[in-house]
Length: 233
Length: 233
DNA sequence: TAATATATTGACCAATTCGGTCAATCATGT
DNA sequence: ACATGATTGACCGAATTGGTCAATATATTA
Image (cartoon, rainbow over all chains, first blue to last red; front, side, top):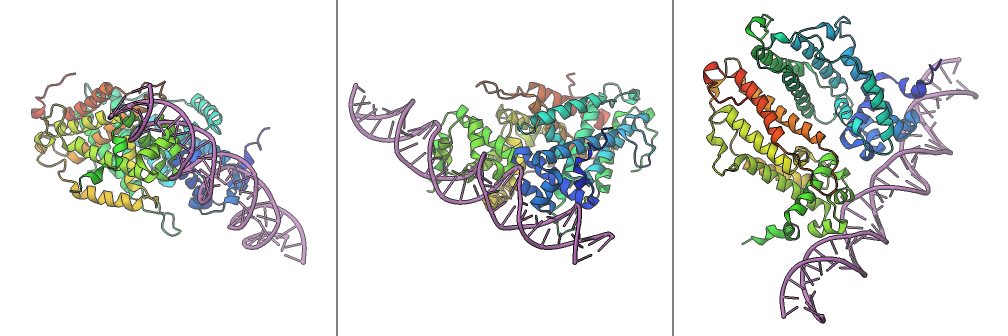
């Protein structure tokens, strides 16, 4: 029961993946850059390379499209952190080393932002959208998302490895800002969308740069006796 | 000669400081949030608490106002980094300790962003403005600013204090992201503009939080022998 | 106080842009 | 040839745009 209620957006979801991603990325980009009220459908369809009629054919209204993107991004974000990793066995909460666990999360998020380059910008703004058109809906979604929130990062972590006087939460913050800064940096590098080929940022340099920062902090913040980990540089 | 050419904006500059700041902050906020083309004059004057006629009386056009803000912000930013400090004797380039010099710069910038909370967001976006209306002007200003650029941070710095294998440039980046993150965090805290009192963020907690991060990094990245500095926590 | 000059306002303007519609076309499989 | 659904972009009324200006409020000078 109540199963087919979800699929109001069949028309969109039956499209091929490249087209879907192009449309969603266009939405993430324009909504993320200008916010709901200032983002125009014309901008979005131009960016996505489709006609205005199509977008309304898929979603019916600007509001529906925005909310669809928000739900989608939130779900994908949650799954990225909580779900299994690439080899389907990596459960993040099984890792009890601070850096191992944090690196895994950051890397997953960074990979995600290579597939949807403007999604992180979108989900950072969307929850605070004030436009009367979507305000209440956003709040309801936020409430549901908050209630679904389960495990926190610091649960069951080997914090004794840190030197005296090092606050793990500060290290957590530092590496969060770091990951964000790196992604932003590489996204500015990527020039205008050439021709038709999706100019994807290859995230290898992104990940390895993050690794350098993470390794630097681990080396200096951990007690000597816990530095037996492989150092590949 | 050519002296009074500058003062086209007498009408604005003769206003009292509070009003000027309110108007500029409104511009920084709206332009910074939406970009030139999507920022509307109506939004700005509503935010500033003045009438639309006044703004055109001061600046003549949207374009003029935008460019005025950009020039002002760039000049203020430059002066903040290069100029003397609060006690008029602190020349940044005289400090040869990495953290001393960096902390001084970051603190100055953080204080500035308590006076103009949305200026940093504005100057981050403005140089890349693509709107045809202001594109060429922005580029010209950028060119001039680049040519005026003089001293770089790493000149004449005691980098030997760092432990082997620590890249000072990475530390520089890390603390830049850190300062930015802290300011962003405290700016979200500040709620809607209550009544008429300018809700200024008191930057003491901001600065002291930055200090904690800076101190943590210094303690772990410097060789033991250079840690004789006072540790106030 | 009266007179002059300047500051400030918001209703108003033409032009553009907005979200949304829809008849017409295209694509595909039968 | 036919039918079905996908796609388009010209088009709509409504809202918003940057900018104007006659009217009013305030400050300055006499």
